[in-house]
Length: 309
Image (cartoon, rainbow, N blue to C red; front, top):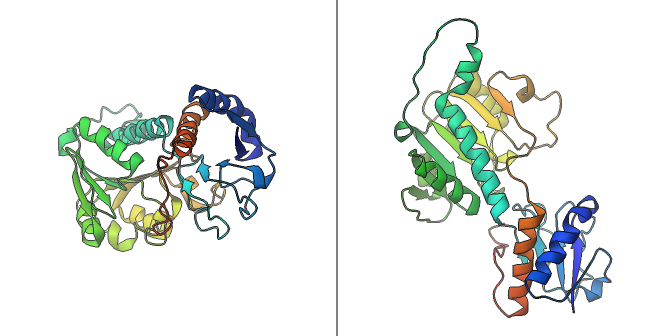
């Protein structure tokens, strides 16, 4: 019998209980899934960083901590966490992000907001570029970023991808490193941020890097709030260097009611909904990782502690 502790936020247990049990059974695993296993009897922990469990020291038998979120920045630095940590990458998370990003890229590409702002009886026509003539840069070419970049390239956009380490994807110009970041941003008309949150990525978009964009560029951030210097973005919106921004993530969440983003006519705020872990598909990934571990195979999506993701 494999003892699995569900240590996500307590409110999520009713949503995950049945999908997890079904996934374990489908994988042929004999699992005792609970929220109250004795710490020294736990083989695997299904985890979310907003869990009450923050001290991993008693979990001496635990073979792996399996995160329910794609982001691990809130847990990877925990000094008590010595067990292997796997992040969540699943179809539902990936597909949700692709749909959200594609929708907002098309919104800015077609300048749908222009049409909404001119519903005043005047026959004001504007003809958008074709996708092949629109330069889109995706910052972050991990699982989510590469999926979004591929979808946008399939639609015909001129896509450049940027990552900290070298990557290669068919139909996408891939750049990396400090020089690569500047090249990726120079002349970009739409920028999608999907980098992880690390000390090295904080304020990736700042006054200097925003100045590299094509005048009137659009910013789309479903990644992490600290990737953007908020004051620099507001200043760029004021000058018109950035024409619009769609922001799903923020340094403080929920976004404070008095934050200038709420009332800004060129900013769209969405409440961290770009992509959500879905119990049915996430449970399949959790079960597969337990199966792999029990078979002596390497875990999927293992976090590199040195890199922070």
